[in-house]
Image (cartoon, rainbow, N blue to C red; front, side):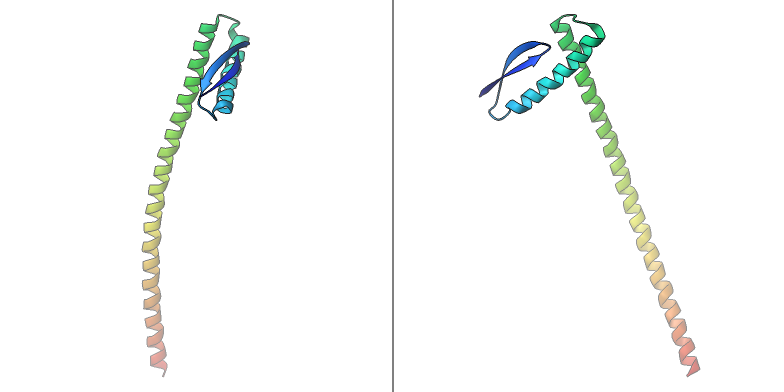
Length: 117
Protein backbone atom coordinates (compact mmCIF):
# COMPACT_ATOMS: atom_id res chain seq x y z
CA UNK A 1 0.00 0.00 0.00
CA UNK A 2 1.29 3.45 -0.91
CA UNK A 3 0.38 6.97 0.01
CA UNK A 4 0.29 9.95 -2.34
CA UNK A 5 0.32 13.59 -1.41
CA UNK A 6 -2.04 15.53 -3.71
CA UNK A 7 -2.72 19.25 -3.88
CA UNK A 8 -6.38 20.18 -4.43
CA UNK A 9 -7.70 23.74 -4.13
CA UNK A 10 -4.44 24.84 -2.55
CA UNK A 11 -4.61 22.20 0.18
CA UNK A 12 -2.44 19.15 0.58
CA UNK A 13 -4.09 15.76 1.13
CA UNK A 14 -2.36 12.45 1.87
CA UNK A 15 -4.28 9.70 0.08
CA UNK A 16 -3.68 5.94 0.33
CA UNK A 17 -3.63 3.86 -2.85
CA UNK A 18 -2.42 0.52 -4.14
CA UNK A 19 1.18 0.23 -5.26
CA UNK A 20 1.58 1.38 -8.86
CA UNK A 21 -1.52 3.61 -8.80
CA UNK A 22 0.28 6.73 -7.60
CA UNK A 23 0.49 8.49 -11.00
CA UNK A 24 -3.13 7.68 -11.78
CA UNK A 25 -4.24 9.13 -8.46
CA UNK A 26 -2.16 12.26 -9.15
CA UNK A 27 -3.92 12.67 -12.54
CA UNK A 28 -7.34 12.24 -10.92
CA UNK A 29 -6.50 14.81 -8.26
CA UNK A 30 -5.35 17.21 -10.98
CA UNK A 31 -8.73 16.79 -12.71
CA UNK A 32 -10.57 17.58 -9.49
CA UNK A 33 -8.27 20.53 -8.84
CA UNK A 34 -8.87 21.91 -12.35
CA UNK A 35 -12.63 21.64 -11.81
CA UNK A 36 -12.28 23.41 -8.45
CA UNK A 37 -10.20 26.20 -10.01
CA UNK A 38 -12.97 26.76 -12.58
CA UNK A 39 -15.60 26.79 -9.83
CA UNK A 40 -13.66 29.25 -7.68
CA UNK A 41 -13.43 31.57 -10.70
CA UNK A 42 -17.22 31.38 -11.08
CA UNK A 43 -18.46 31.44 -7.48
CA UNK A 44 -15.44 32.32 -5.34
CA UNK A 45 -14.17 30.50 -2.24
CA UNK A 46 -17.50 29.37 -0.75
CA UNK A 47 -16.02 26.69 1.50
CA UNK A 48 -14.17 23.47 0.80
CA UNK A 49 -17.15 21.19 1.38
CA UNK A 50 -19.47 23.05 -0.98
CA UNK A 51 -16.76 23.42 -3.63
CA UNK A 52 -15.88 19.72 -3.41
CA UNK A 53 -19.55 18.78 -3.67
CA UNK A 54 -20.09 21.04 -6.67
CA UNK A 55 -16.93 19.71 -8.36
CA UNK A 56 -18.06 16.13 -7.70
CA UNK A 57 -21.48 16.86 -9.17
CA UNK A 58 -19.99 18.50 -12.25
CA UNK A 59 -17.60 15.59 -12.80
CA UNK A 60 -20.45 13.10 -12.30
CA UNK A 61 -22.54 15.04 -14.84
CA UNK A 62 -19.69 14.85 -17.36
CA UNK A 63 -19.39 11.11 -16.74
CA UNK A 64 -23.12 10.55 -17.27
CA UNK A 65 -23.04 12.63 -20.45
CA UNK A 66 -20.10 10.61 -21.74
CA UNK A 67 -21.77 7.29 -20.89
CA UNK A 68 -25.00 8.42 -22.55
CA UNK A 69 -23.06 9.45 -25.62
CA UNK A 70 -21.40 6.04 -25.73
CA UNK A 71 -24.82 4.42 -25.40
CA UNK A 72 -26.01 6.40 -28.40
CA UNK A 73 -22.89 5.36 -30.31
CA UNK A 74 -23.53 1.71 -29.44
CA UNK A 75 -27.11 1.97 -30.71
CA UNK A 76 -25.89 3.61 -33.92
CA UNK A 77 -23.29 0.85 -34.32
CA UNK A 78 -25.95 -1.84 -33.94
CA UNK A 79 -28.12 -0.08 -36.55
CA UNK A 80 -25.15 0.08 -38.92
CA UNK A 81 -24.43 -3.62 -38.39
CA UNK A 82 -28.06 -4.47 -39.20
CA UNK A 83 -27.95 -2.26 -42.31
CA UNK A 84 -24.68 -3.92 -43.33
CA UNK A 85 -26.26 -7.39 -43.05
CA UNK A 86 -29.24 -6.23 -45.12
CA UNK A 87 -26.97 -4.76 -47.80
CA UNK A 88 -24.91 -7.96 -47.87
CA UNK A 89 -28.07 -10.01 -48.37
CA UNK A 90 -29.14 -7.68 -51.19
CA UNK A 91 -25.68 -7.90 -52.78
CA UNK A 92 -25.77 -11.71 -52.55
CA UNK A 93 -29.21 -11.74 -54.18
CA UNK A 94 -28.05 -9.38 -56.95
CA UNK A 95 -24.98 -11.55 -57.51
CA UNK A 96 -27.20 -14.62 -57.88
CA UNK A 97 -29.45 -12.82 -60.35
CA UNK A 98 -26.44 -11.61 -62.35
CA UNK A 99 -25.00 -15.14 -62.45
CA UNK A 100 -28.33 -16.52 -63.67
CA UNK A 101 -28.54 -13.82 -66.35
CA UNK A 102 -24.98 -14.61 -67.50
CA UNK A 103 -25.77 -18.33 -67.70
CA UNK A 104 -28.90 -17.60 -69.76
CA UNK A 105 -26.90 -15.30 -72.07
CA UNK A 106 -24.20 -17.98 -72.45
CA UNK A 107 -26.85 -20.56 -73.41
CA UNK A 108 -28.27 -18.17 -76.01
CA UNK A 109 -24.80 -17.53 -77.45
CA UNK A 110 -24.18 -21.29 -77.59
CA UNK A 111 -27.53 -21.74 -79.36
CA UNK A 112 -26.67 -19.02 -81.89
CA UNK A 113 -23.21 -20.52 -82.46
CA UNK A 114 -24.57 -24.04 -82.89
CA UNK A 115 -27.15 -22.63 -85.38
CA UNK A 116 -24.32 -21.08 -87.44
CA UNK A 117 -22.45 -24.35 -87.79
